[in-house]
Image (cartoon, rainbow, N blue to C red):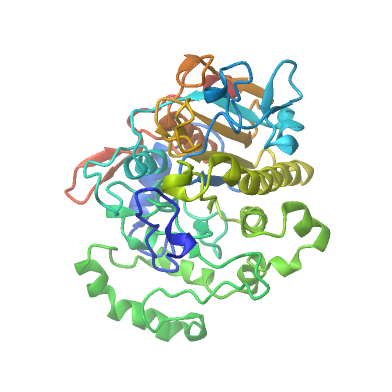
Length: 443
């Protein structure tokens, strides 16, 4: 089986989504937009703010990343040592030496917790703020945060898409009842490949970038297909102001934004010439150029051990750890050097943590009661460790938070009030988040 289809022990691969969805083209009337903007009012938010969300798919281990337990018994401590950070008495796993050397630019939440140890429910929860009601479904029941941002806020610049997913879609990275026009623009290719290029934007069968030169024909095509979209409940009728969004699709600026060849070779090398590193570099290019929400998949963290995965936790992290360490460290350094540390918020979060005790197959299993989350930039009070776990790394001990609090910080950064309600498929108003508390220490 293809490795890209084996990222989770439940054998449910990320679904192959439509290659692109232009948020903001359909489904938002001017009155809706003004209402949502009014509800989000209350503080001045620069229009260029953006978020890079790194999804640590599979659920990373807290012990072998940001919360090692060097004094715990061996079956809890794990196979790796520790490396000191810039904070006295605080260590990271020695899998992350580069990040350990820049903790003045990081905030690590060591006591994030929730109730699910399921890939499906945990992924849906951390990407939408809601648990799945049907844990067997592969479809979003609630819209993911990127789709909400596309719906409520739109792109920072008219020619750019509002939501881009790099290295494939998030597991639950779709718009649900908001409509498929708020699904992400998905880049499934390998950004490190010699032949990497972003494919044509396929909105509907037969409609590609090559056809966008004739604006009148483009509008006629969409008007003719409007009844089909409405019947599928994926979009409302086109409003006059949304026609401006057609400027998004074929400008030279858009093509340049996605062109990694425009980056200097030393910059590309600093991120690592691998799919994850180059995906992070592409994310930085996109947020610089007006995309408010970019997700980057970092899969393969589901390390149960030899029997289930075919490799041990140690074997996996010896391969994955250096790439993750280098990529994130280079992105953080780049954001600060470019003066983007107030404009861009970086979040690295999986769907749960791993069991405190190593299992009989030299791996760790699913564990909702504790996980670590990395935050950088966003003009926040970084340079701190927030919260603590018990001595074996299984449960929160101090200043616990939940994934919804992380999502609330993302909404805050983009000037979106999570008390906003959007009507679901049944017309029922749904809050963006039901738990909306912020992470106080970051403010």
